[in-house]
Length: 165
Picture 1 (cartoon, rainbow, N blue to C red):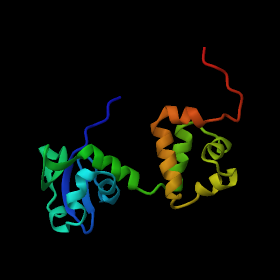
Picture 2: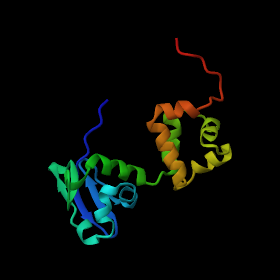
Picture 3: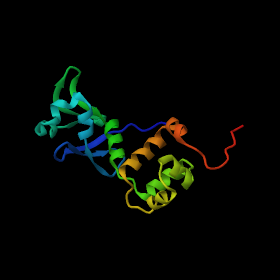
Picture 4: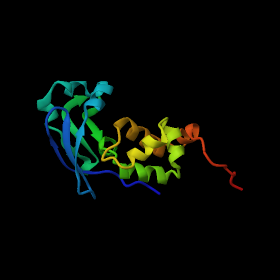
C-alpha cells in the first residue's frame, strides 16, 4: 500500500505561527501551529519573530509544499506538504471513538492497552467514553500505531501467544 502524496490547495496565515491549511481530497481545513517546528529547527529562525514575513507563506510546486520569502543557501525557506499533513494529523485531538479504533486496530484487549500505556484498565475504559483523551496519550497511541518495532518492544500479551507456523 502506498500513501498518497499530500498537496496543499488552500493556505493563509491566521496569526502568530499558525496557518490555516486545506489539503487535496480533504474537506477539512486544519489550523496548524508551527511553533514547535520553528523552535526545533534553526532553519526557521528568520520567521520566529517576523509575523509579517510569516504571513506571506505561499503554495509552491503545485501544492507539494509552501514557502516564505526568506532566502537560504538552499533557496527559499520552505516546508513540504507531507510534513504539514503529518503535523495536522498529530495536532488533531483523539476522541474516545478514535481511541477505541486505535485499540482494535492493534488487536489489544483493554488490559493490554492499559499495560502498554502504564494506565489502569478503568482509565482505559473511561477514555473510550471521553470527547478527548489527554494529548500525551494520543501522542503515545499514534507513535505505537505507526512504529511496529516500538509496539513490539513494549507490548506484553495478557493471553497465551502461539507463534505463527
